[in-house]
Length: 308
Ligand code: ADP
Ligand code: MG
Image (tube, rainbow, N blue to C red; front, side, top):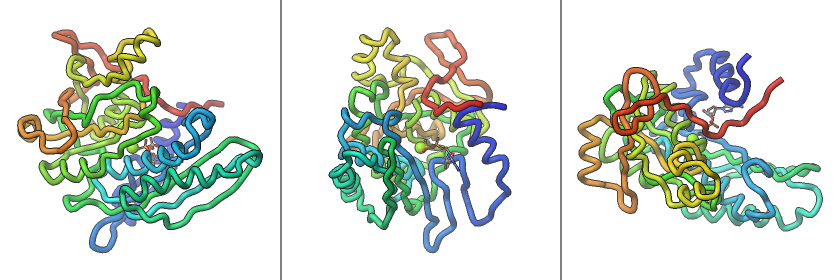
């Protein structure tokens, strides 16, 4: 049996019957539920001490911000508008006085900025590390939900900013691209979109899997963050490797028609953001192209691993 996070999610999706109460079920950045005026979006994320953050290094406030930011980023990936959040925390029993309040402060900072109501949650304690789980409810934007599954061969692939090296600090300061996604969706039809949590190559892989097509990524066009260059000096890996495979940039990857892609490059319609074309969708395979050479692209991004 295939093991680990994504194999489990695939098995889970395979076991579920078609459920007409869900327009989009597990497998996308948010679930979509038919709603009143606008369909609803629902998403959740868990952060675990020692895996997603080191508490002593980050501080509880940054952890709260990161948890809220990661969830908001999934709403952005559907081009949605967040409305309310539930905050679940499991605190370490010892020495955690003050921790919950700091965590809350970080959560509220982003909740206020993005006008999300804190609607409730749950608080436990145990003899392990800090765990935080946020669930966000939102509404789809005026042009409808953008899923991972609508990319087509011939589409151009874009990313909303440079990637790689987020571990140097940006992973604790997500800038969820809510406004940017709404602006983009209002400008051109977006065929598919995802936010980068696992890594550009891995997350584009999720779009390809759901869309049933392939892609060519042009190595010279992948926008590499300065942090990826700094990390490469220490890690012995290349800046491109960091840009392709580091997680938690929380930028958006999206696919549009070639004609709309040309327009986006010409007009750059999203204030504060440069849209970078870094590849194209093809019928089959997943490729990294450098000059004229094409090699299979094997994502090495983040996945939670578990086995027998
Ligand atoms: P993201 O990185 O966008 O948060 P994930 O990789 O965590 O997405 O999850 C991928 C998909 O699998 C999502 O649609 C999520 O809801 C679903 N999923 C993950 N874990 C579970 C689970 N334990 N039960 C049901 N659905 C799950
Ligand atoms: Mg996501």
